[in-house]
Length: 169
Image (cartoon, rainbow, N blue to C red; front, side, top):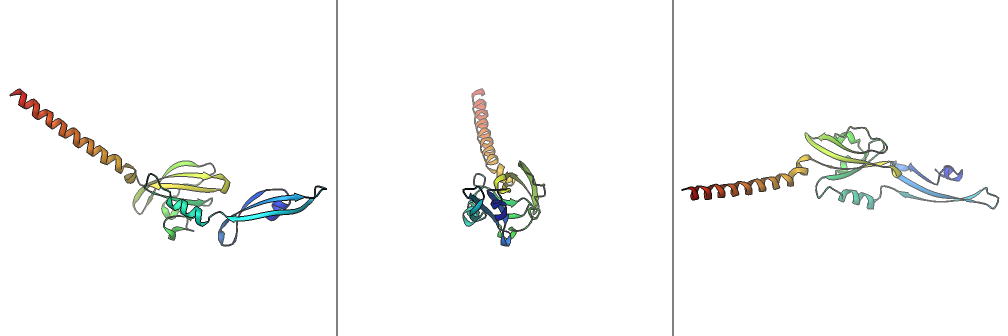
């Protein structure tokens, strides 16, 4: 990465450093008064850091489901189940190929349960952020409201039927 910056090929380079941690290397080439490279100012920062990890672990869809991050190869970088970190997304049942520009709803099955996930490609870091939940979690509130409204409608119709029966006598 340093050579790419020094040669003027790039200003910010992402690369996997030791331990496969993704690092952003932002550098600026400094030229002499003759235009030749004189120095390179550079700084590096791990992309997967405690702040990002906590933000992803706290993310969900309306208080339900979970979020996770994958790299371009489909390796889980951040997942609420720490035992899955470093594992292929296929361990979750997520086998749909990842692609640049992806912004899709995908379905997958894990441990016999169906899930839906919105997977979005984050191009600057070439990562994929996914938020998943089961259809049951998604529809739970709607089902509760439907049952409530159906119950209220049934009681209302029963009252109307009783009143009509009383007035008909």
